Amino acid sequence: MIIISIYQLKKMFKNEYLVISDNTPKCPLCKAQLKYRDRRRRIMKLAGGKVCHLYIRRLICSSCRKLHNELPDCLSPYIHFSTHTLISILRKTLQLESLFPEESPSESTTNRWLERFYNKKQTLFYLKKRFFENDPIWLPKALSLIHNLQYFHLSIPI
Image 1 (cartoon, helix red, strand yellow):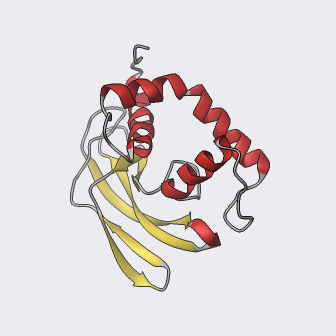
Image 2 (spheres, one colour; image 1 turned 120 degrees about the vertical axis):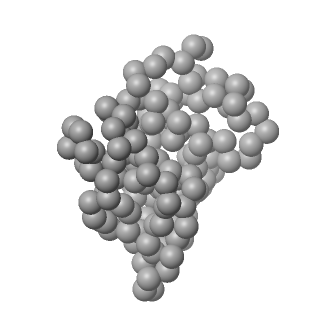
């Protein structure tokens, strides 16, 4: 999975958007050139219970033949909720505020997200201090950076 931050959303139908990106990334595993293969539909849940569908590119590596999804940074890997909704849910949960039922996932899902967040908390706060000091939307950028760095097996000093 490759997380991109430069893209455009083109409306196709009601609540359906095409993610358009001009860049051609390299394979995160072997660094070879990726080629366009097809698109797949991805669900994105927004605040208030609204749902829209994004059509994201699937790319194939010319060398190792692995498939990679090109995910816009408005989505989090393996989570249907938008990054903005996910952050607001985590903030409300961490501040022990009540959640609106239509926008909240199940309690077990929220607990799983919090567990992932706390496992990466030191790394996240290091990244905030080091790279995203005055950025109001630092959390999704830091999470995508951690996700993309996992392919390089780099450790971040704490």
